[in-house]
Image (tube, rainbow, N blue to C red; front, side):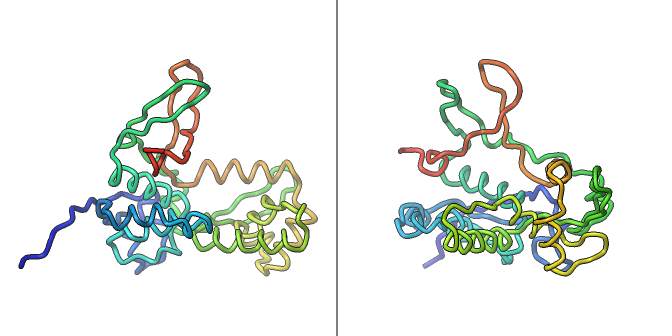
Length: 242
């Protein structure tokens, strides 16, 4: 008896693989994904996965055919994989409500942001930035899936200590910044973020990171006119029948 075949697609990563270590499967700049089956629908309806917030990661891991290290995935590349997973599961048309109007976006025509020249020049996940107000020189990197998991665990721990605490911004910056004025010890970075990072410099750094970061362009023009806005990723993105 011949084996049953499942069709697959090659997905291009917004980073083009330039920011991954040499030898990583992700450095190829593409991954192979299969179409969603009934098994993946079981994942999407698993209440335990939904409640603990792992359902989408479980889904994408199941759909990825390439032998990648999922923890290495950069957040922007993961977003592209999420869009591909939706297309492979339920098609390219995504219908949602925005400001009281119903919109349908063709997900298959979404494009990656143009790759910044700084990424093509450096080809490594570490960049430099001089904070415009304090003049301090910092290096930073784009976050991976593992970083996001570590940040979530740290935030959960902080909330157990103080339920009213919500230092998400500073916690994320402590993972993003890799050195300050040449000092790369974690205690030095944490001390700098907590006590010396000016709000104006924090905003400038975050804007520069947003400019550089490879990602899929999840925006559209509302039919009512105006500037492009981000597509709302709601429950109907992977549960279109709800």
